[in-house]
Image (cartoon, rainbow, N blue to C red; front, side, top):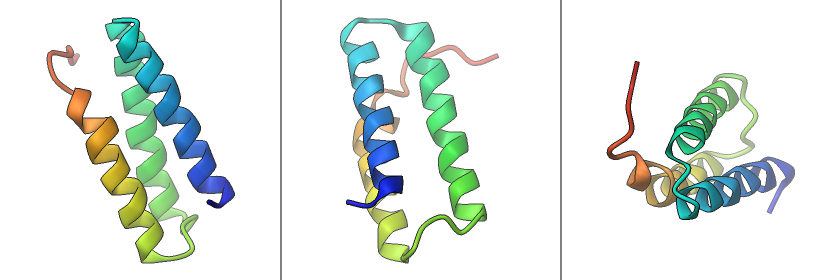
Length: 74
């Protein structure tokens, strides 16, 4: 696991903890940060291989998008 993947893993673990604590507001804020980071990292060519993008995207789908329900958007 490279440094970039480790950063995402850390964010995913923080989000999991917020979800377990039912901290909806902070979980939503962190979700938005994760989405923005992912898009910026792709645009800035931070990923070394397309497989790395897919790996992070799949993990995001299972651990971020999955909980993107019943959150408020303004």
